[in-house]
Amino acid sequence: MPISIESCIFAVESTNKFHRMKHGRLIILTLLLLAGMFSATAQRVGGGLMVGPAFSTMRIQGNDSTRFRPDFTGGVRIALIPKHSLIGGEIDVIYSRQGTSSKKGLDENNNTIRYKQRSHYINIPLLINIYFRRWTEDDHDESKIPRLRIGPQIGFCVGGNEVLDVKGKKKQQYITPWERGSYNWLDYGFTAALSYWFVEVRYTFGMANVFKNGGKSTNHVISVTWSDIW
Image (cartoon, rainbow, N blue to C red; front, top):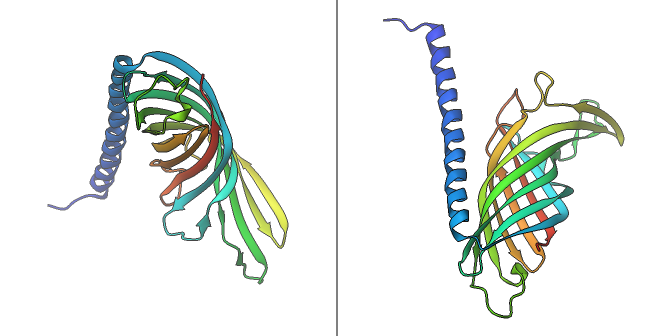
């Protein structure tokens, strides 16, 4: 029995829809489990700030010339802090400038050329905080306790721009996620961080495709922030 092109297209679309539903259900289930754990272990609620440099890139299918570019991140934290448990949690709201930069190359006219891309995200990670030791009488806050933070993150793209640098002359184009064929407005992935005193090193790797068209491209960000909580 011959298989029609329409049947193949339907099968591909159904498979993609299944994977999107699977990822969405996984994130929702994780959030519900984390919320239940936090309510059971938390002793008090704290808030804080985080700010510092970020280094971002994108892994683009079929392109090995991308590199990390320096930028900025900052936001607020709301944490559920335990005093009798090794497990706590927090939710962050973070502004993150992301993107990538290509290595220098040559165009058809033998001119030096470099491509840069910058995007703006509001990221919301929901994290489990795992403390490496219990609180003691000498601990006035959590800053002196080493801790690991890990959990899912959802991001919302609010715009970006592309810069083409040819012989030091820059051509810039602004893009919004509402334009056809530009950025996907929704990003999601996972975050892991190590914190001690007021310094935190965080790595976020995206799972969603950054662009609406083209090959697979995902965000990757390393940040080193000053982080406080009270």
